Length: 346
Image (cartoon, rainbow, N blue to C red):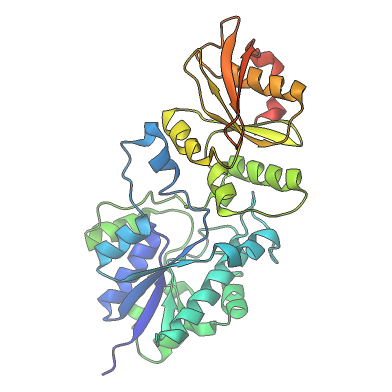
């Protein structure tokens, strides 16, 4: 008998981990696929910030694949994914998350991979009613229709709540071995994880996409507004995750490190952005994105001084360094917090 093969969408979360194991229990050969958009939380902020040093530095998708004993194929879709972020047909969620369009896009890409590698169907860890945009009973068929995968997409954790798929009708898998999970509660998944012997897994309720984060979305929208177009590169995505972003004017902003780990990370961008550093006191490295007048340079220096250890002193010494490495010494009075409007801080 031919062993059927499924490709699993692996996010690194508990649901996709369980969905794969359910299929393995039915004798299906599974390999994972993980799409890299650049917006995933893990592996970036936790690795950068010193306060997060005790957190495990792992790629959860790779870790899940290891626990399951399957191959994981990581595919870079940064450039292709831009159109999903810029112009989502089905709109955004609460922030700048194009969840339904994202799911359609990823299933479509997985379908291309499935066909190119001789696999039979796709599985995902989706649960009916868990996500407000992409995991409703009325939107799940949209994913199947618009991706072109039709009934070769199987959702093992909610399979009993959904119409039978091709793998079920063909007898490749047993519908009786699927589950009927629904709603936002993660208790059924956690109980199944315990049954399968999984004790360590990613936070059950957590997504890994920064586009669902309100503060990050404000920064991204600000970036688009300042540039006059919806554009971004990988460096933009990374820098929006790091530091305190302060925009005193539409044509420039400051990226102020919040702690030592972020300062070390921002040092890698000193040849791409002018920067400021305190010399008389301990203080954060600050990148400057945009062009400033002489008065605005003084304003920026006063803001940077405000976040230094000399914030309560009459004067703070700093250096302004251009991309070419030209250094201008500065001495400024730290700006009082009351003079930094809330709307400047993104």
